[in-house]
Length: 120
Image: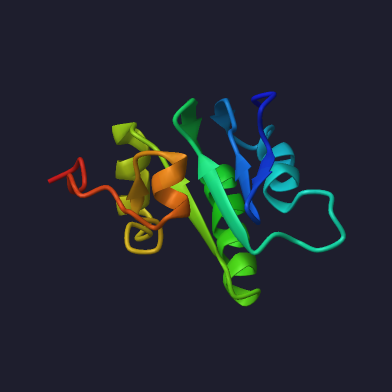
């Protein structure tokens, strides 16, 4: 994980995982998304630009965090640029749930990437 992350910015938790989000990394991702505060964060941005691979374990943690945030009246938003993540979300039927954001600031302000999905 990036040393600048996780961070709390104006009530929004920002996490920046690096490398592979697979079965071995899933517990660390879960901890980063949840935080160790008494109150779970309702607003979370996961900056996936430095992620090289995601399997079903990583995707499960993102879906679980998304549901938890929504239940608390918040959201989980994903920042990414890799076509593989785009393809995974499409194949898993999660493209609508996780629109693409180009930057952390865009995600915080709900300015979704307007260049369309990378997969036709």
